[in-house]
Image (cartoon, rainbow, N blue to C red):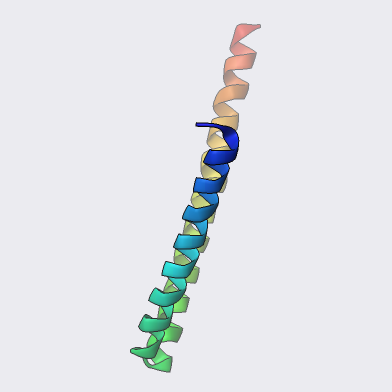
Amino acid sequence: MTVKQRAILQTAGIIAIIVGGSVGINLILQNLSAEQITNGFAILSIALLIYSMYGVVLSRLEYEDTLKKMVDKK
């Protein structure tokens, strides 16, 4: 498969995900109240913050390990 064919397939996949996500979100929002939407947004925001914090801590620990290995080699 050539690079152009892979690019076409990946582009089609991205478009399908966007369309499917849009339809799914539209159906979900039609069946939820404003309070449920607000609560869902708050929960997703908190989850994103926790995941971001995890990423920062993981990066720091990996950096410390790498630095320790470099110091031990000397």
